Length: 121
Image (cartoon, rainbow, N blue to C red; front, side, top):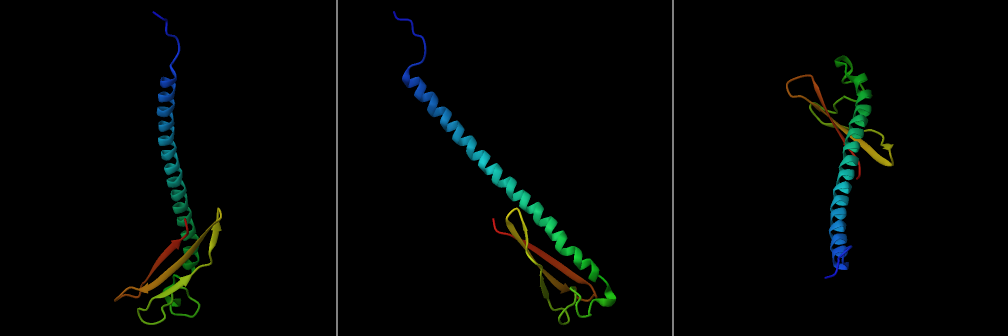
């Protein structure tokens, strides 16, 4: 009877295959997590840029000047929609652009601003 010390070639190959499959599975998880982290960071950045684009509109939130020329919240006609486009902002080599729609609220003298931030992924 022979004393067996060490591993056979088949055992080493099976262990290497199992190790490789485990590492490939974990790398897929890390890649997906990295993609989700980048997407979350871009959403946070777009929210900050949205604040940056909306801040200038605060200067125009005065009912006595809503219908004057040059006011970003002015409507073109009674209840009509007016879209404003802000200048694109580039952060981390990504271009973020903004479009805001100004609509009149029916039966009131109020304005509703809907701002959309877009970027390419």
